[in-house]
Image (cartoon, rainbow, N blue to C red):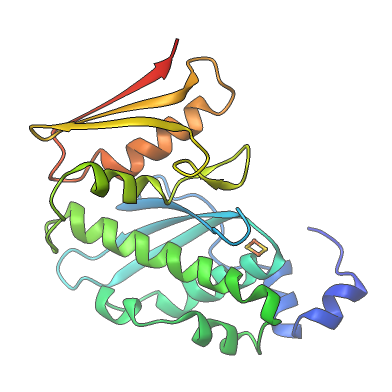
Length: 217
Ligand code: FES
């Protein structure tokens, strides 16, 4: 783990520093019911949330995370996972970034978006679970629906989403099939990451029959 500098001590509460140094619920979960990666439009950092849900009670049985963000993001996401474990999906949806910041003894204003990212990740994971398990209606499948889902994927080269950074060239939707033309070649260093994220976001949705991804020549 990184050293706790005096700058951290001035910026952060002792509780936040403790959770940053010893975060709870960090790691992958190979048998997760849902996995989602969410990026912050404020800073380009990312978190991945893994969640297991009790099918009958709809309670969060287990939740883990990986953070590609700052100290505040590691601490806020760790706190979020502790707060929602055992809650029903409906209860977990009501958790706010403010509650997480308060539970950590406060956050500096410039770091509030780190708590927002942890809540966005949680809500994305819940929505994905609900959509894939038929608990909520998935919006009508059209180009703007696909575009809205792809906006959550961060282009690792630039730190902004793959739509606004021009990675997605064209989206075609026909008879429940989705075809996405990407502006990257087959041998792009981030191809596997970007394709994996697109598949994660779209492949299991009940309104999509087939997903095809094409690359630049
Ligand atoms: Fe990006 Fe904290 S600065 S998550």
